[in-house]
Image (cartoon, rainbow, N blue to C red; front, side, top):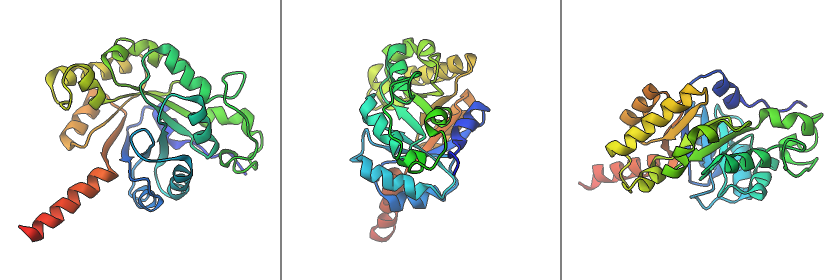
Length: 254
């Protein structure tokens, strides 16, 4: 039995645009439904969702047959949290609130086996197909994608240093927290925030590092892609449910 290939990581390395969806509903049924929708990647969130490893495991299993590569966001840049997610089969992680190159290096180290990192070893986890992948311990690092999230003005000032850390495969710009950090909380569309988002894409493109972002606006998504963002989440399962449920109710109640 072979090691699963990380299609998302390979596509990013080729510079291909990857369209994704955020998943916050903590449901394997929802994960299975959206996994068949045709997205390139789906972000399984545990930072701002009541998602714990047993539930994440069920969602990873549900996503296995679909088109999308699962990306799991841990609650924090913590080696224990990352280890548990990798052991249950996550091959891509988005690490939140990375402020500098040292924190980016910490995230990478948590996802790499010694001597390249500090990831703890199990020989029977789901990541190795329960011990069935030959030489998993020697080959796993090559298929694990480490994305780091830059979401403050302080981190943005360190963008090139963060992105240049060996093992960082892409940098995700968090528009909501960035807007708050820049003094425009709740207003990522503010010109100063948009200029920072545009500048971040240009700076990352200049050093050959893929940039990612999330928006629920089609116009914003198309603009971000034009600016050079390579992995773009164009909505969320929670947003889709809320929007269409409200619209359906309004149709019959108005």
